[in-house]
Length: 350
Image (cartoon, rainbow, N blue to C red; front, side, top):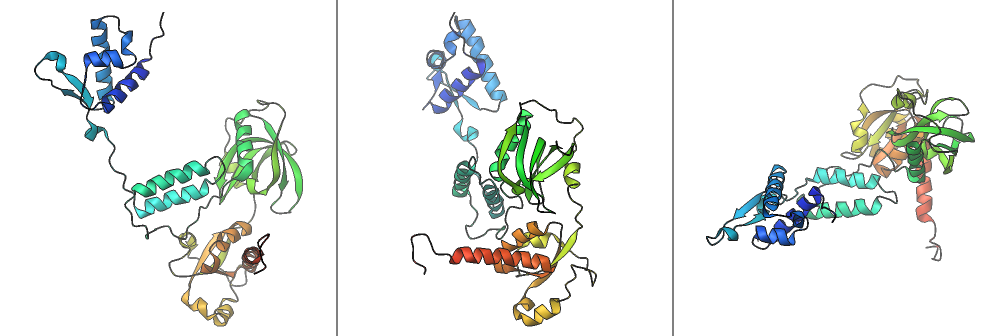
């Protein structure tokens, strides 16, 4: 017996035919040219099939028009109302385009970079927002791309397969091999973390992907463990560090560094604490440019994370306190300046 066409495939074929017809398609033309209707052995079977399909398409919101002929019943035809079926023009504001731009900046790994860039280019082409207006100028994605470790860890979570990797601890700087049964991947505080069971400690632990050195290697057979049914990955991640919440005092250029401004806290830092800006007055007198800046305070826990973010704003942000954060930002800026000043291989020193 010949293979019957699936009803969904027949419906799709009908839509394609009715959309692309220049005028109309009669029932006889549909029966003879649209794949799937040749399955009807009799006229009555075709009539029932066609009526069911018309009703199904109309329920899906596809407007099918009946086009009358010159007076003969055989001349009655069908087509899709193009004006009612077509999608309206896409209108994106400057802010919406800006958010999409940030999303593209985030998904910059090898698997998504090309598709994301093409999609954004098409959206910019149809957007009506002024090109010079960007409501999110100066912002950067708070979650960085995960790098080469994300894919292997995601595969391991799906396969329930243990992994091993070299990890540098944040507090001590110790580097050692870890054997982990990964449970979940989470984005928190500007980075990606894998939550799972550390086999050496026989306890739940979390690991920041940016601190993994080298490759993530699978270990053992897939399906070797089960993810706890009552897993609270956020709770495991929340207990990853006992670092206290600190407050940074920052001087910002007006209308710059909006992401930092949005996280500003109003509480004063008690004098004499490690984060107290004891030298703010002296710095302000020594650097007249600070008089034209806005001073804000931002809470943080990880010095390295905030230093990465602040350094990305270059001269738009000056760290007044704490001292260790200011030094961390300066190290990053000096390293960036050294890279920019380094001679190009094969080029002149100038």
